[in-house]
Every structure is written in structure tokens, then in C-alpha cells.
Length: 342
Ligand code: NAD
Ligand code: WQD
Image (tube, rainbow, N blue to C red; front, side, top):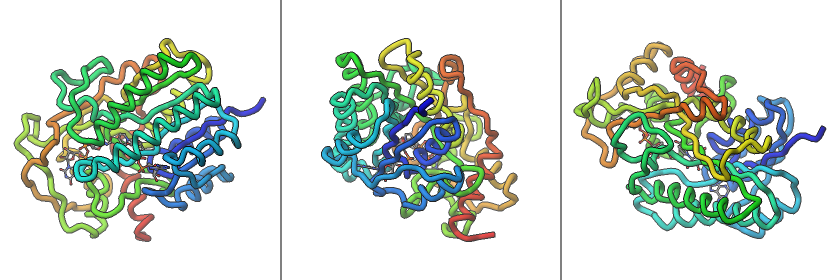
């Protein structure tokens, strides 16, 4: 029997590369496209080393409709996972057009090509950022979205709406939006992981870079929140677990099991973890002292958000499995790998 092929846009990136590995391990073929605007060719090498086989990779900008059309002409696949997007919240405040342009044009091009070429299934990378500061916690997929507080967040809300409208209008199109919480960690091989450019905005890369001596001190943004230890609570989801959620969603689509034409799933652990708890676990499992100081709150941060994952657990048959400790070990192993530390 021929294997199902999945097109992965942005597949050289952090989550895309882990998902490519998980899909091939689950018996799918993959075609990866990426313009390497926020990733490196080495990620594809890492994927191939883990799998012990070549994967199809093409240097394509998803905003380039003609180039994208060529991909649809050359390859037969029923499912697309669309990761390709810019993701820096702060940068999106300074350069909103860059974000609307890249994130929305690339997304609409993908949907248009799927429509033109009769390719049925699209899986979209959405984000917990759509929930903003929710009234009730944990958040379910029914929790109302709050108005976006950044152009980045707005691109996720708009793309969700576009997908919803297109699935309703086009008989042959089925969509799933996965709302990721806070993805962290790396593949256990330490051959792929997150590659932030410049000073990291996200907590874990800042932690690992501080542990590696690249940053002097980690700033903890606020310890006066109404939370058990005063620091913010988040739902940190291991990237390998997250990759497996994509496999489960692709299986649901390719098996024709969707109950609605457009479905949404939270992808998190369901467990809130504070900034200080994360730091102390990182120190404990890696036997490292992390220099940190408490500073003022970061504007725009919500005090707490974590997922109700019942829907993904029940409907996708997926559950986060890796322990926080293992994830934090993998994050440090990856940082040491890219810094050539022993
Ligand atoms: P990433 O930057 O590592 O990966 C995105 C990839 O897309 C990169 O390899 C980049 O080169 C590529 N890309 C960007 N624009 C492109 C274009 N026009 N054409 C072709 N390739 C393009 O980011 P990630 O963390 O792997 O995130 C993947 C997706 O998940 C993004 O859509 C992001 O918004 C979403 N997401 C990420 C997080 C997170 O915290 N990492 C959380 C929620 C949602
Ligand atoms: C986590 C916690 C910070 C850095 C962002 C996006 C969201 C999604 C995931 C894409 C917060 C604290 C952080 C530091 C700190 N991405 N922190 N010192 O803000 O929850 O979510 O990434 O969709 O859209 O907004 O993640 O990793 O930046 O912060 O104290 O140097 O760590 O205040 O409580 P966030 P984060």
C-alpha cells in the first residue's frame, strides 16, 4: 500500500522538524517546504540523521504563489500542515505589516492551492494566545477568544476565521486548528531543537542560554501576580508530545473521521507551572545554578493560562506523556549540542 504523504510548510522550523520526524516514524511520507527565514538547512540534516533516511525538502517561500503551485504540481498529498509563519510577538508590534503579510498571505496561498488542486486536509498551527486573559481556567476550546493584543496574535485569530469560512464554503476542504500552549524542549537525540535568533523572547531558550553563559542573568518578569508563588503560570508542552498531536490529527483527517468540517483542539499538558517552578526544576534535573533576578512585569503578559485537554485526549486519543523533568533535560542537552559543550 502506498504511504500517505503530508506537505509540511515551515518544516525546517522548531515544531515542524519534530513533526516531520514523528510523521515518518508513524509511517507517513513527508515533503518539507521552507524559506529558511527563521531556520537552517541543518534542521533537515538533523531530521534525516534521526530517521536514517532522506526526506524531500524544497526551498520555497509560501508567499510565492507560483513557487507554491509548482509544489502542488510536483507532489501528490492529501494533507498539509501549515507551520510557516513569523512568531515573535514583540517584533509584530513594531512591524505589523511584516506579520500580516507573511502569516496571512502564506496561509491564504496554501488554502487557495488546496482548493485549486482538490487537496482536502489542512492542519493549522494556532496558539493559546487567542484566549488572552481568560475569565475561567483552564481554558477549553469553547472559552471565548479575547481581542488580540498583538498583530501576531491577530494573524492567528484571522487565519482561524479564514479556515472556518473556507471549510464551510468549499465542500472538499477539511480543517483542524491546533492551539499550542507553550512548546518547550527538544528531541531526545539533541539533533533538532529550537534555534532562536538574537536575544530570545521565550523563557526556555533564555534559561538554557543563561545556563550556557551566553546571557548573564535571567529576568523573571514579575513575582506579584495573584498566583501561588507570585509568578505567571503557563502550560509548557513538550515539543515531541506536540509533534505526536499532529500525527493524531492527521490520522483523524486521513481516516475521514472528522465530526465537523472544521475542528479545534487545545494542545497542552493541562498542568500549570510557574516561572519559579520551571527554574527550580531546570536547576535540579540538570544540576546547574541559574542566576536570576525578579524584575518588573512584562507588559502584555497574562497572569495564568493553561489548557483543558479533555477534547484532544478523548477525540484525538492523544495525551502529553513526557515529564517536565525529561523535557528540561532535553532542552539543556540541545543547548549544549549547539554550543559544542560537553
Ligand atoms: P519556527 O520559526 O521555528 O518555524 C517556522 C518556520 O516557517 C521556519 O522554519 C521559517 O523559516 C518558516 N517560514 C516562515 N515564513 C515562511 C514563508 N513565507 N515561506 C516558507 N517558510 C516560512 O517557529 P515554530 O516555533 O516552529 O512555530 C511553528 C508554528 O507554530 C508557527 O505558525 C507559530 O506561529 C506557531 N506557534 C508557535 C508557538 C511557539 O511558542 N513556538 C506557539 C504557538 C503557535
Ligand atoms: C513564559 C513565561 C513570562 C521570558 C509566547 C507567545 C505565545 C506563544 C508562546 C506563539 C511568562 C516569563 C519569559 C523571560 C520571564 N507563541 N518570562 N523571563 O509569553 O506565555 O507566550 O510564546 O504563539 O503567543 O506570547 O511565553 O516563553 O515568552 O513566557 O520571566 O526572560 O515566562 O513572563 O510568564 P508566553 P514566554
